[in-house]
Image (cartoon, rainbow, N blue to C red; front, side, top):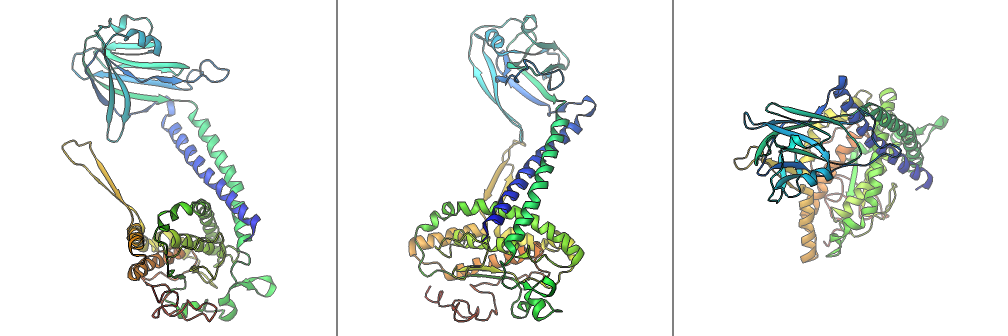
Length: 497
């Protein structure tokens, strides 16, 4: 595998991934700027807080000083807090002051500190601070940066300034125990410029990353698939074009589907190695994350080309197939547990490795299908594959508390089957053959759907789980690969398992 194109692909994919994260952040900040047009605040819901003490205070709110600026300019960041006494006719006090002044005021007073908030469902976590003193009326204190008190809804607004601050809510007469409904709000004039800056940064990274991915993928794909060769006038031709120009690929005559996924079970597997394979494969996982980012970029670019020409670019096609091949090898090693042989770091076919994936390059692709294959036509298959391979979660609301929810999640069916196979190896040193064939069937279905979604073929995946090491009806490939035989007969590699 060529080093320079490979580095270009990884670097380009990394830039695109970073651009995606920055772009999401920029879009979010820009949306917040749109929500606070005309000076509107971004507000939270109004929630009730009960405290059995003289005061309810926030935890320390620390604002670090900006270099060269003791205080931020007015309007850059503004906080607003509204408080309404839960008991009709009760006067409420709300104020904000330096943390040291609040600590001095409440130093010997029993008060309640709000230490954490959970929004969905709403829950408040408090810490009781003991004390025997009785505070003076809060409105008579002169250290408040801003404050308000009264029987109606009270509101304070303050520009963010450096230092340590605390918000305090009390009964206006300083009496013990209270219940208050609070709503917080925030506004900043920085949302719009920050959002625009983030979006421009993301666009710049995309302008650099996408060409790197496409050029690198093209360089990796050139010569990666031996079924492609140069035709007249230097045009790359597929095997189907060379042999049958009008009918595409000969593989469709011998296989139920043109994709070919194979996996041969190793006769003697380690009893314990499966416990750490996920750790050993971490270098593969890091690379594959970036390769899949690149794969989707290549798919989008190829889709545009297919839409106008009806052909998948021959230098990009082997790259996409290679990413699927690499993924399948790692999956065969880590989750299928079919081999203890460490997967190679390459997109190219490796005849000596027991797992392989191949898709023949099509002579022509339907130009219109490219618009609906991946999201509409493949939807039934995607739902089935999600059930077979996806983790599950369930949310219930037990008890009488309408806000209480319990979320339960569990592993995918493939993960459960891998665990069963792992325990079978641990205690018997044998991999149950029917279980292995079933896992291969699920994997084969999944990769056929992936090939369709990634626009590699127009043939619709069959609703069928073809089990076993080989694709059904696959003919022997000769003495150089004796393990590849008809699906109906076990290969020499599998016979004694």
